[in-house]
Image (tube, rainbow, N blue to C red):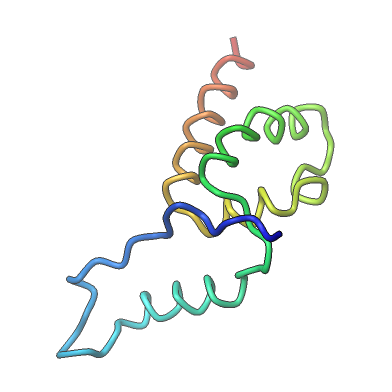
Length: 99
């Protein structure tokens, strides 16, 4: 059975709508990217959080984390909220390694 779709996707603010129902070019590109990269099997935001430590650890060990965890990478690319979580963790890890 395929995994459920992610809990949330990047928000498309109402202010992005131009005259009536026309979408701005930026919003259209975001939607096209999401559709192009949608897979039959995806991980949820909860699963992403459960796996984030493993993904980061692989990268720190010099492994090709995106290749080893492609569903994680897909979710990272498509989910703005989870991408923020990942960026925050990476900032912490980089500061820790600098000390």
